[in-house]
Amino acid sequence: MPADSADGVGRRLKLIRGVCGWSQRELAKRAGVTNASISLIEQGRVSPSVGSLQKILDSIPLSLADFFALDVGVSRVPVFFRAGELPETAAGAVRGQLLGSDDRRLALLRRVFSPGQDGGAELSGRGGEAAGFVVSGQLEVTIGSEVALLGPGDGYYFDRHRPYRLRNPGDCDCILISASSPSRPK
Image (cartoon, rainbow, N blue to C red; front, top):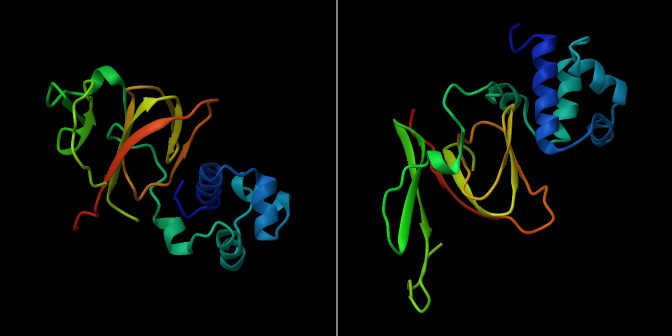
């Protein structure tokens, strides 16, 4: 079914609501509409007017243009990588690992310091790409309609035009090393 059909709008709204971590009731309350309205839209049983949809999106906040521009499908390019799948780029005190597909890579460095070793000083949008890997703890990552629970050594890589959410479901701190790239010219 086309993305602009009632079913497409409903699936898109449900996905975005999920990325925000809100129940239908929470979104309805924020938007000033009934819970039944949100439910019927998400089920594809009603097609909201432009004004009604705008009222709901204002509570997120998200413009109509951004709502329809988001890529909410399943990516054909992998977005999740397990520890054993990441190629090593260096060894020793500084170890690098690459995340991404063959034609689109982002290098991340994971530094390992021996006792007494001094690594010196370190200097630490929309669009572009994002990547990260979990050092310790657990991280639930939602990218579009894909969800994974990542643990130490696991990583993600995705286009930031897709909606995403990062959440710590555990009972201890999660340490994440991440990086992002600027938007690529089209």
